[in-house]
Length: 206
Image 1 (cartoon, rainbow, N blue to C red):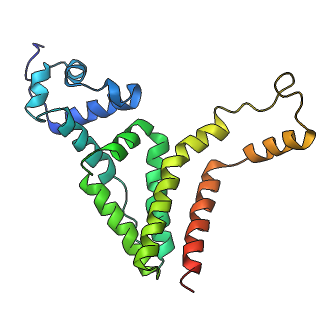
Image 2: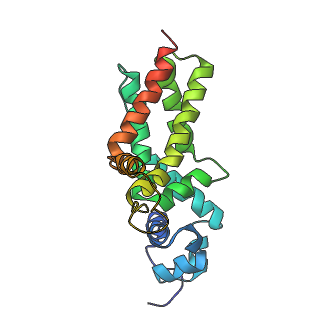
């Protein structure tokens, strides 16, 4: 195939290839030239669909976030919030580079604003004041941003105390506590953290 404007090249095809690059190599690896090489076209062919890299990244963030279910539990506000938060958490774990891209766009994707508004709507239906709803929303956002790093810390990068320096002077209780802390199911702990947070804010409305 002659490199140039590939017949049948569409926005969806370009976005799919862009996601593959970001997921496998990270966001910094994505460029119009790299994307063109992946698709077998000249970089200029990409510009027929996206005016520049920033517009491409915005479209990727919109596409990823628009696939997150909005969660419809109108008779149970906490289930509604939990379903949205859990779906966003799954994105952060399954596609961390895409999640980072979505959270770092200067122009907030429309889908992100819709998710935000749905979450706030559910919090208001739970009886939270405007101030409490905003505080709860930001608390959940902090939890979502930190969850991937916390999970990596307790499951991937902490091998635990072993014999030899620098662990020789640890007491038996300290070693036991370390193992207790790291004997955790990340998914269940995340759900419990969200539940505790929502219960805490709900108690303020009583």
